[in-house]
Length: 175
Image (cartoon, rainbow, N blue to C red; front, side, top):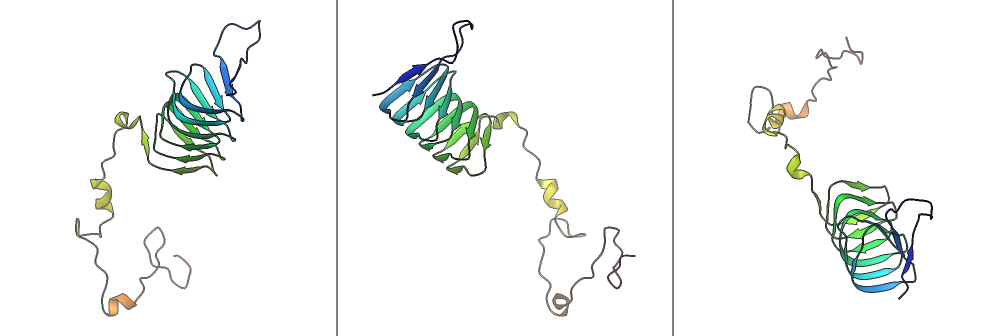
């Protein structure tokens, strides 16, 4: 097993989050727990858990695991469910097959996502009232009545075009 731990800080900086890198030639089975940032570029099968960390799944990574972290950025392939409490980002090269739950979800063009998505913010958002919206879509004078197709000679005649003002168009020029 090849696990490389690197820090992105130099000796003059104050202590901060550590970055751990699992290189592209790393293969791991089991449960991985971490703090700070974990960059995964190899293969992992099992479970990935972090209370406060950021998981970055590189474009060479293949992950078969359920994931729980604060933030998750996916560039590679994931087969499993993802819970990102704060943010989940699927970059253009991402391939995710599983259900996701996140505080915020960003999917770039080119990313593939097959599964269900659930917002962790849904209980904080007021659902719109749809009854009044659908009343606007019913034919005038027939509130609540379903629209019926025209029959007979009425069906064969097209209705005249009208501009926004509501007056008929004569000879292709609105009046």
